[in-house]
Length: 345
Image (cartoon, rainbow, N blue to C red; front, side, top):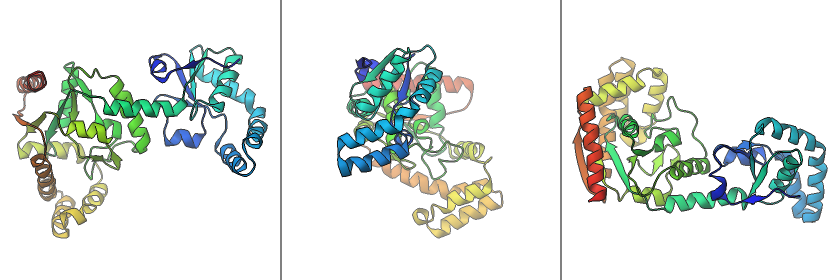
């Protein structure tokens, strides 16, 4: 008897369940439903061989080869599934909710596990993700020049009980030429979208959500167009931070990295900044003069930022940021009150 099926939106509400991806290792590594574990019914080699046979001789021959290859491994698959799941309920999916997930679901159910198979498989999650990107969301976008501490302020806003989507955290990149330093490798574009969709599921669309102002690209990843277009039309709140404090923050954040890495990332900007300015910046870096290193860089990034700000379609509100616990609390209160006024009228 096949394991019962379940709709993707219902399945995503099973927070204590174990998700198992029946697709091959390569499919899983490219992108998967966040939180899922890989338990391939057919591995990369199997899938390649079966695909070739399907094209040459058709479905029946391909199915037969599939059982010949996977049948001897049934006991191993069951043992691994039991090890991963323990006593928890299992949700299984493959590409389209077809043969692979149903066979895996049947195997694990036969072994005594409580199993459900996702209707439409992984593709149903992709459809769900796109719907979330297109959903109307009440957002405030936090802007500021490089070194303004936008990520720190988003964390404070989150700790104050507000909703926040951390795009740079999801992308594993801080947005600039130096943004990959100290970060995990960026996910694939598809996995980035899957992870963003999961974060959006946790957000109440009727309540205010904060995001950091970004260009369309974060490193090599592209913010989905429907979500990015909404960001472009939301209230824009700009942190106004003095230059010396921005420099101090950047030095504190990046000064611990080897100078070889900083030099490499600085030289990568040659086409955009020009050779003379990059040379000046690199010389400052190598002599340990942080301000000389940063002056050409910030001139470039500030110019780019101001150009983008001038072309923004929405209302801009500046907030002056100062130091000290009392000042932080005051600015935080101001940011939240501005967001409520702008979005609630």
